Amino acid sequence: MKRRLATLVLLVSATPLSAQWLTLSTPSIPRTADGKPDLSAPAPRTADGHPELTGLWRSRGVTGDLRDETKVQAWARTVMAEHESNYYRDGPHRQCLPQGPSYTTGAGGGGGNLRRIVQSPTVIAILNPDLTYRQIFTDGRALEPDPLPIWQGYSVGRWDGDTLVVESNGYNDKTWLHPEGLSHTENLRITERYRRLDFGHMQVDVTYEDPGTFDSPLHVVVALEFAADDEMLELVCNEASEGGTKHWVGDKIADAQATAVEVAPEILAKYVGTYEGFWLDNPTTVAVTLENGALFLQRNRSAKSALVAQSETTFVCPTCQWGQPYVFTREDDGMATEVREVQVSGAWIFKRVQ
Image (cartoon, rainbow, N blue to C red; front, side, top):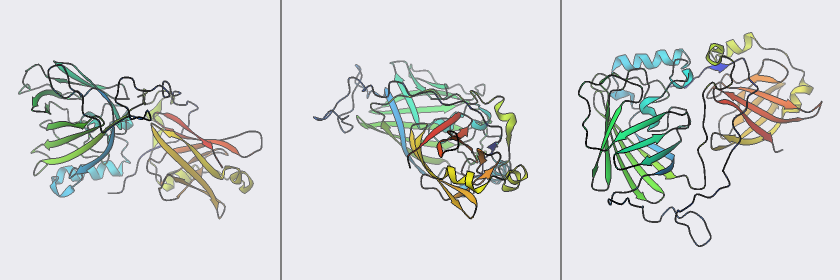
């Protein structure tokens, strides 16, 4: 299913928070002789002998059948198609709402690639960049048989040897399981198994059971890596977008062309170049070319996408993965010095490098 998302057509001047503490080394972790984090060192343990899961963790990949539509019932496939036709505008992340179970795989878009785990004897907290959190109670309580549905659900955990087994229920049906709009019912039940393989690597086996949505349980494996010498900064959706979601419209090419303006070729030429920066914690390269009088953009290794001018400096990218706008900055009449990629989390700055 082709992924199409909404476009923000009223652009903002806000920028993400400047990085803080990113040059501060993570204290009290094992290091090699040259001072680098030793991710292959033995996993630490708590005073009671269980593996210590506390730390900042980054998702390094997800495998499994969560996107296998042959296991999804017809109604859910129909709803997924409706979400796509709506350009995924009704997705929880696009509405600045909690993303529920999708945080586990880091697939919701709210900075889910990073999470901080804080472990205590009776409760484990998982903190997300978008200021949401989750509690896993390890004090021996059982799940409620008839819980009041909420965004993050209810979770209890127990140790099975060195594996933390987490059972969750009580999710409302407003969240998705992946960005392509896979819905679920309020009977969704999730079982996770956390295994810290060594100091720097953890594996999370996740099983999804929902007889009202899946013909059989779905299963994924999430690989996590300890994010040493790094920090998680807050990512506030719609933080400074002057009303945010009311300005979101479909990202079809026709929509962009309807509000397009003509920009002189000599102006377009000033935007050609390569720009680099960070989106969330991901190094990102944006390459802009001028071909047959039109600007094209390539983000990292994506295919080239046409930019449609909305003003002399503002362009939308209707065929980009997120349909995001780009705003160029020029000093006087010179070449552009930077380009800003505008998303619900703010305007991410990429500086010209050539």
